Image (cartoon, rainbow, N blue to C red; front, side, top):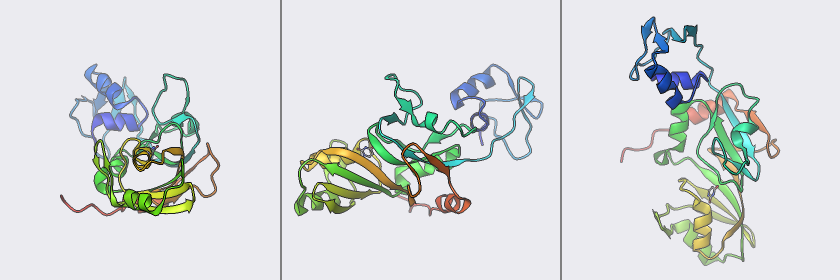
Length: 234
Ligand code: URA
């Protein structure tokens, strides 16, 4: 792992902040000055300002994101951030992907950078299940259009699974995650979203969690996420 990622995972600073520490000559690896391109291997001794740095263990948290919280690190409008909601976790964990401020539901946070990168990468097609309350009552033709793929301003959406849960409520299972995707898809078929909830992320459900609460993943759940098959080469 790169030195800046190692320092970030150890909670010393963000990756960019760690780069600054390295450039300022405050980081040593095995008694030598660390460089921006230094890689850390098991057993290496890393020090910042002469103090040894202990690598943090990897943490995986599933949060039931409540309404009116933001997935960014800070909000200029002063809304609560999801990172604040998990502040009892001592490690520096960050959300995997984003949910809109007014979307509720399953959000994974971790300090496992490589796994977060894989899960968020469109090539891996992680399954996301959304429940959308919408304006009006979408008919079968609208559901078929949502399922088949729609032309949005950033291109055609991939095929999705779509179910009617109630006259004005639909469930969409997507394997991609573009910005505001569900809202844009529903608006494109004439049924803007009134309320959006993610009930499932990569097979993880919110069972047993209340809005605003979180739990650590079981080792078996982490294994299942980590062992996701590689996508076929394109
Ligand atoms: N699609 C959206 O429109 N918003 C979200 O928060 C997630 C998916």
